[in-house]
Each structure stands twice: as structure tokens, then as C-alpha cells.
Image 1 (cartoon, rainbow, N blue to C red):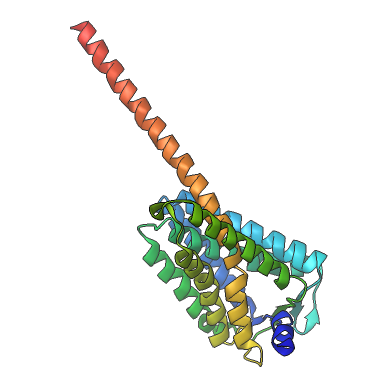
Image 2 (cartoon, rainbow, N blue to C red; image 1 turned 180 degrees about the vertical axis):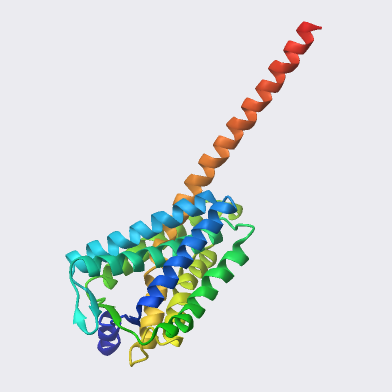
Length: 264
């Protein structure tokens, strides 16, 4: 039991990649945002950007600057300053934008959810092969999890406990699907963790399976109750605006008909 507990809290997620990987992935993020804007998925577009900014605040602000659990190396030399900030900014925007777009499209059950998920997951799977054209890996990032996985688990437990208590207090047709939220929260992180592992971006070692399982269960999934709460507030606000707009249109039509009748 002690061995299992120790291994869970000492896993060290690591990635090896090259500059071409960064360039290609940056272009993909721009294409993804462009597609979201083109298809008028503005709530997804803004939520995805919010995710990228949030990931950067967590990764650079907490993991790197406060807890010192994040390390970036180029050509086996530990980086600091601008290079570290630039790499962590790209990583945060990359996975923050794709993860939050993935989640928001699923939560709102968007009409194009299958197409966008195929695009995102397919990219995660293929970009390592494309980047191999740029030579071997020259950049390495890693982080330890001892300082925060326990607190992440606490947030996860509190969030889902709140949903369970909510479901106990409402009618069946108003209950939140715990399975659906977990499927999204676990699935999104598992998809890119799996893509990293099978493509060699994340090295295969004694902790590989524990890394992908524990990270998938906790790291993105802990935010699902909060994200769903944000979606409910957004939905109510959106419906309220729609109702007001329809009401204004109806009032304008009534006023127009009244004017026509008076003129006659």
C-alpha cells in the first residue's frame, strides 16, 4: 500500500520534442481557432482562449515559478528566463486551447462535435510523426507531481461530491450525468497522454502507465464540475438574451402593425 501511494505521488511526466513540433502545433492552433470563428462557435472560441491563458497561469505561475516543479531543457541544458517562458506559453496555449475546446464542444453537444474532436485527436496522433522530419528531440520538459496531486484530488472529490448532493436533491430529469462529465474529463486528457506515449514524446518507463492513468483521472477531470457550472450559467444567460431579443422583435412587429392600422 505504501509503495502504491509513493509511486502515485512521485510520477514525473516528461516530454521530448523538437522545434518543428512547436512550429507545426502553433499553426494547427491558429487553424483550429480560425475554424471555430468561421463556424460561428464564438463561445467555444473564447472558452478555448480562456483555457490557454488559465493553463499558462498554472504551468508557469504555479508549477514553474512558485512550486519549482516544472523544468525545461534545451540540448540537455536547463533553461531559464525567456526561453522557458516561451516554451511554457506554447505548451499552455496548445493544450489549454485544444482541451477547453474539446470539453466545451462536448458539454454543449455541438452539432459539429464529431468533426472537431476528430480534428483535434487526429492532430495529437499525427503531429509527432510530422515533426520527425525536423530531426531528433532537442527540447525536454518535465514536472514532478508530489507538490500538488494530493490537492488536485481534494478539488476533484469536492466538485463531484457537490454534484452528487445536487442530484440527490432534484428530480430525475434535472440530474447531471456523472458518467458524461467523467467521460469528457478523463477522455480529453487520456487522448493526448496516449498520443504522447505511443509516439515517444513521453518516454516509456516504469511509471508510464501510472502517469497516463493518474493524470487522466485527476488533472483535467477535476475541473469538470466547475466547467459544467460555467456552462449552466452561460446557457441561462444565452437563453435570457434570446428571449429578450425575440420579445423585442415581437414588440416591434406589434408596433408596426398598429402603425399600419392607424394609417389606414
